[in-house]
View (cartoon, rainbow, N blue to C red):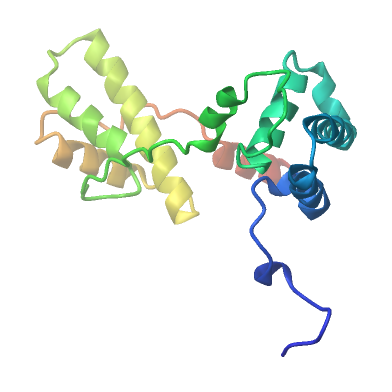
Length: 197
């Protein structure tokens, strides 16, 4: 549907810095059409003053004025011909997008434990028996239990934790549930409080 005089943002040119809105972008576009450098600079200073008023909380930043001029350079696509108070080339690094970080996708048998738990399983397989390994077993088992309870939305099953720990460490780590003490979880603490009431 086309209505004369009515246009939508989707039909308009995309804003370079949307935070300032279309009116500021229109002012920047107008400043580039002014005939003399003095008029363009005066207009640019007025635009900077308005931009500054839009975000007064940024006054506390050390380089807030330079940031505004950098934004003006970006919005003009570096085409505004004025005597810049700051080097507009510094704004170019703002325009470049960072390279996407690769996400390490590894296939693990039980996703609810997460990759780090499987790294701990590999570490536990190679550790010598002793206090250090016992402490790592305790930490790993408790984290497995927390992960299991978060994913299943119910109280975790200690037998499953013991079984999975033995299976994924190739039987090297065996915990005796009659003597092994899991950390208290918030869910159990809440259940106890409810029973007391």
